Image (cartoon, rainbow, N blue to C red; front, top):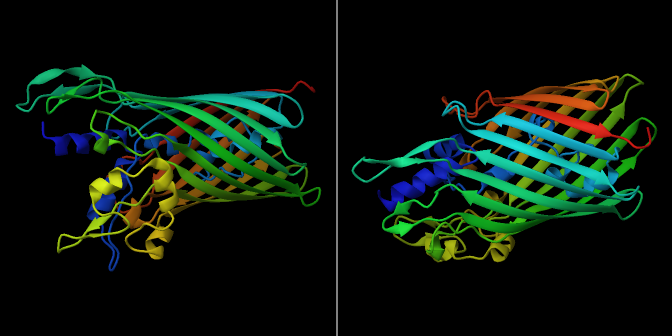
Length: 392
């Protein structure tokens, strides 16, 4: 098995969206070169809940709930319940296979009126994969998987502002000790951290605004072999979000949300026709050897295409939500990523229902990009949340 082919298979297996990679490789824009940023564990960027999953992946400033640690950990300090536990199940890329699944379990506990703790576990199964040799011989089956576990602490700095911090352990076992070019691959482990700020203000009895800023997944690189040049960046990112809530009357409420997200990962250099490289790095090896922290800093100015390309690396999420009697919700959203940076573009929709202490949410994804056989099409998420309020 050729090393180049193996790297391609690994990228395809762990990619957050296979359609993104395929689309970016085949699409070109006049005067703009495709330059997709690849990372390890892209599942860390996937919405773990059907709520934000129905709002175009906008969630940084969404009202605090059990999924807050993923979107903005500081929100837990404003969480309305004493205890909340949530879980989500997502059949993943079911167009490519029926055995890939995404599972999430998380929750929080309010210590007092100003602070809270939370924890979550994310598990991603890539199903069953046949391993073959260079001559096509069957070498067995393996079950690649990834999981992440994190703990969060959030506290209010004032009546309107909160700060949050999260520590995360990441385990990626997508190779199961396979031997590639006489080199035994290994599982990859990493540590990462998040930090977030959340601001919430009641304009009056019927209007509320919120703003959020979070930096996620800053940590060590992933190593699948003893070759340091093959280390993968974590999908570190910075997210800025806002929300406007308007309570029309006792029965009708609307929410409008928008998120801007950018990877804090260095942009790969591009090889010119004359063999030279354009960008902040001497060549691709220099790029791969960049540390995570230095790469996060340089990610704001290292794109070969200059500031124009840096702006194209910002993805947009927007969503609207309607609640009736705080019991039934209807949601609609849109996600946009530039075509030279992956080209994921899709509409999302969903509903939510509250019954006593239980919340049920569903979301549905409809791709709008021109990739005709998009494996993300018809992605469904189902979330359940159980709430406990000591006051009641």
